[in-house]
Image 1 (spheres, protein in one colour):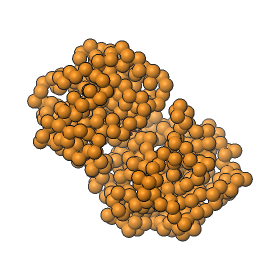
Image 2 (cartoon, helix red, strand yellow):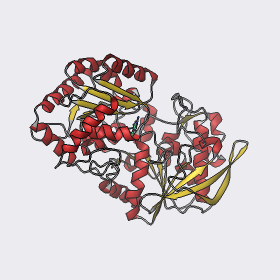
Image 3 (cartoon, rainbow, N blue to C red):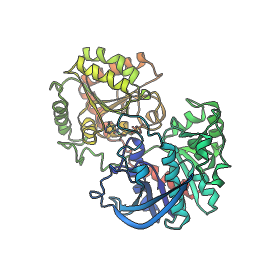
Length: 471
Ligand code: ADP
């Protein structure tokens, strides 16, 4: 069985969020079960060709996009496991930029739809020309949502699977843009209620199998939570082929015992290093070295859905209670401004690093006591999984994958603090409880050890994908 896994971000080569982590680790987890796994992704300028030994191949082609003919070339490297091939599609006009989705000011590229059309047409070209053998084509999110339909038009014996990593992003495009697609594809698309098209919904309509990244989120989508009526009909139409599989994590890269980015390694049986990482983190971000104060970490795209409206209202009162906060993230100018102001008001208690910083993300996971992730909705979420592994107790809203992966604390069970409904008073109460348990001492150590005993490796989930591939 040959698997082709298509994603516009793949860690460690390019990353904006959780999709990259999944695309960087699921293919490796699948490799033992199948003949070959080939990942396909764009070659962005930010990707370090020398570091990752990315080689030019002889495979090249041309794509007609409207009136233009645009050339591409395939580059390749072997992933760290030595089994998974990563193919990078080079086209300077579309991918020769540092950003994956956005300009440096956070604004989405004006030609994103064209970039994704082109990317998908290249994937199709590589498959139809026989350059890349495929039995299962695994597409991810709206950027690859048109591929299942495009594959159908080729009439090859290929099964398609489409994974929804986030239903909020549809990749809408207009009837005018539609004319850029190959003729056989465009007649088969369905308009949305806004008189445009949704690449996400096309992926759902035309794949053999549809999945999302947690069972909880699958149920929420089928129940119509945060889903418009038109989209709901289209999801419900594929209900029989739709399921949720929780994301795994790369347990080598995110390992308190081996993490390359943290100064002190630790394990659930030897937590000494965790305290030392806390001291290192406080010093690194310029917070007062008060080791007994609870330190709450956050690593996130700065968007409203991650719960920042609630967090922002509670910061001052929890600083009063002695808590410290470290925020790492970039995104919305409004949230950036709020966090910047909060850190100016409380320079000894709140630190904010505005940007994308992989090493700091690891140190925050290792050095914080708790991880604040009160997302309004969260398809799966990865940071709560990394946090559990590092004994950094997650505080989460019971939604999607957060509800599936964090068990609410009780005196002798549970792995984190869970609140619902999404409401400031519930979050306040839950953060208050977390602080109380933290100050109780021995209960906290047991809680950390329980969290660190959880297994979120890819094993189980990769087997579930493999079963679906074989259906
Ligand atoms: P989403 O995909 O919605 O952004 P996830 O929790 O699934 O959320 O995954 C986010 C991933 O991106 C995690 O690996 C997280 O550590 C990483 N990340 C997000 N923002 C930053 C940042 N500013 N610096 C470093 N890593 C980040």
